[in-house]
Picture: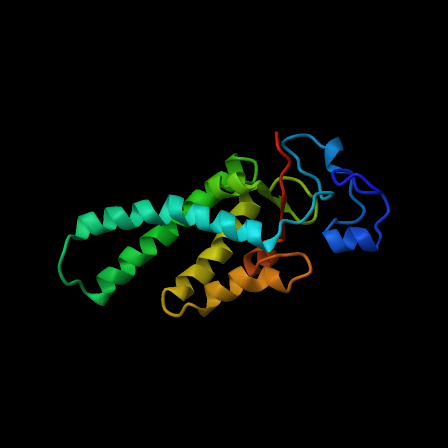
Length: 182
């Protein structure tokens, strides 16, 4: 029985079933900063948990600050739209900085032990690729301020995608993989 951290060199049905990416060196032979494509793709549940944690980290403080700043009373739809957009913008900046400077992981991703990598090279994402991924997510999120379907479709896409990618992963050519414990 092959070791789970060191999949066999040649892919077989068992590898595909468990999400190993074929023709990549085992994760045990990689450096801490460069997670190679031999990693196991992150499950939908882990990805969702990471998104929810990041949402709490970013959205909750933004909403609390907005609530205090606006105070009680009636507000125009335009004001509410702008207040709703602020956490989305903060979230994009947060995700881009974390993916770029924290080894491809936001705080939520660190908590659930997943990492974003470049789909082609298996290396940590570059600042440009992280920016592209975040920009694509922003488009889906911004559209969802009007109608929720784009963001919902983006976040649910891994359920039927063979590489467990969201639409923003596909646009930016990134994968989310299980991160080893260091």
